[in-house]
Length: 488
Image (cartoon, rainbow, N blue to C red):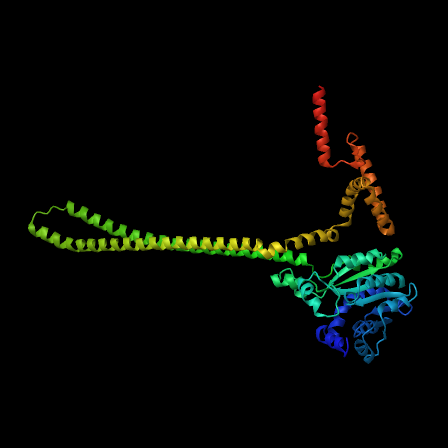
């Protein structure tokens, strides 16, 4: 690219020097072991760009040198008097003697070069590194869906995204003793367990960059200095955020359902209690009037009315009672009308309860529709592949070794029946001394496992040199019982 285009592009989209330097500090703990010897075995940064990493290393006391092909980028290094040279990465590595470097670093260079050149770069890095030396390659993380579909292709010089498993396999295959994937630059707030994860966080919250840190074999006491760093967890993965998103959706659905049920139950109980209180009050008033009228009737029956005057006096005395009785009947009619109103309100409450039930059912249907949606089904294979790929990364070494030990005799039997495939597999294994040694170790462990099983259960041996599974043992026992029954 001409005219300083790429330098201007980096200045606009990569971020400030201060931001990049702060992000790169995550690698300083890995290099602490080499600080005292960096003058004899310096650090080589290929594709050094504007020199943020060189400046950080120099300020921390390391001896480092950078190399880059873009003159526009090197100009920024020269302005700061940083030790940067013009040239390509492979030539710079080939010019270095064996075991002469403490570390080889390359930030966002792997995605710019063809894969064959990247493989050569890794091989040359292994050659030039001292025992225990480190290779650090950082690149965009295509596991982040937003990066893998849009952000990666913003840079016109990018070749193709490099998956984490491919980068890890490349480093291991080249002969490095061990390697570690570091996921980087994710939003810090997503690490909080209380933070709600929305769909955009799943699509774009995964660590946008990752790096592979490979270490050359060395003495045990040297490697032990790095064990804690290689055992640590870094960044956020897509399965982790997807699982938190699923949990959040289930939690919100359950919370909404509980709120609807709680509000309905509280309102219904309150309204019923109010209606019962009104009814009991009106009923008590009605009984009081009826008791008074009954007492007056009994009193009037006991009186002996002998004269018309006394009858007239009695009528005059009873007139207020008749009037009061009429008022009482009117009041009873009013109570009956109020009772009818209460009944209508109760019916309305039941109708509201049914409406709230329908709303709760609708929320449940929405949740089920979400899980049955096209996007959810479309991403199901991706989630399955991720879980399968994560298995070797999340399983403990003891669990993986136990499962491989049990599976190896069956694999060996399957290959023995297919000589052409067996020859190819053996040739591939012999090309990697590390893999060949691992397979030999697993084979010896499987032989010991078979011998142990045969010692504890001599009646159930092996068929074609492969141990019987639990299902096979059950079938064999059933067959032996049937044969014994026929013979008797």
